[in-house]
Image (cartoon, rainbow, N blue to C red; front, side):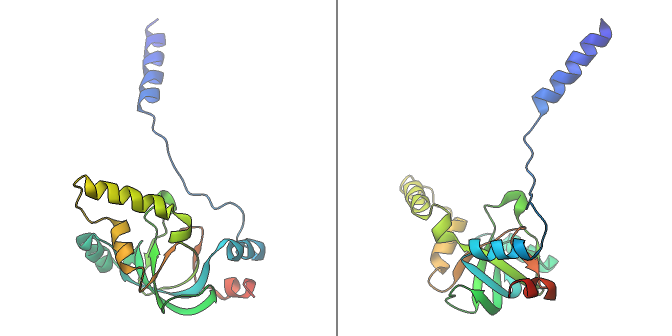
Length: 176
């Protein structure tokens, strides 16, 4: 009887403390077919390097810059494969990608398959929600506010672990 109670309590403990886990899975192998599908889905495809962290959290940006890594970064574009960019610098945004966010090493070259955040992130609904919060007295600058201030100068490009890759000749060959 004691063993049964212990078993029941153990199971209950795990059930009550269970949390949903999220992992990032890109699915499939990285071959020519995969990259051609990425090109089709992407609004932008380009090659370049992460320069520095951007966004409203200056202290965190500085810390990540010192570590030489970033998630939401200013990115210097060397060449464009698909899409029309406003300038040779874009802002890479990953703040909605959770476990799929890709740690980008500052100074390292990447091939990026990205989407235009305005076209894919419920842009109008987000503006309405942010405006409502501001009217209710919420004054803190958000990441979305930051992007809104920068969108005239830069394209804001969303990418993640499944759509940004260290620059390799084999990947570039499969894009031709």
